Length: 86
Image 1: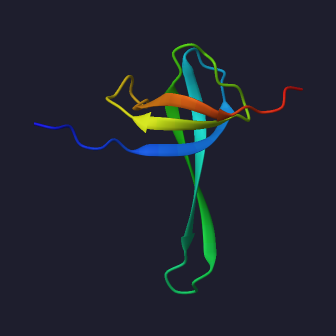
Image 2: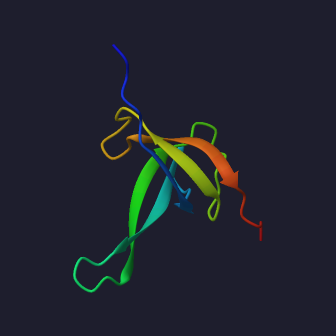
């Protein structure tokens, strides 16, 4: 029996204050059902970052996984783009 494809999202890290956890904001652009205007919706996901590598502003890829805590069911796959350090 094969495992189903896991969901993959790409977004920006908005918080890295927690230990081994980052909060990733994923933006989705969709069309309004009546007015047909583009709407940007943002959803925040908590993702597991085992080595605490990701920093605020980094663009990352996350993958769905089993629940690791009450809110955390995503894990960090890779850091796509590093933010400019201040």
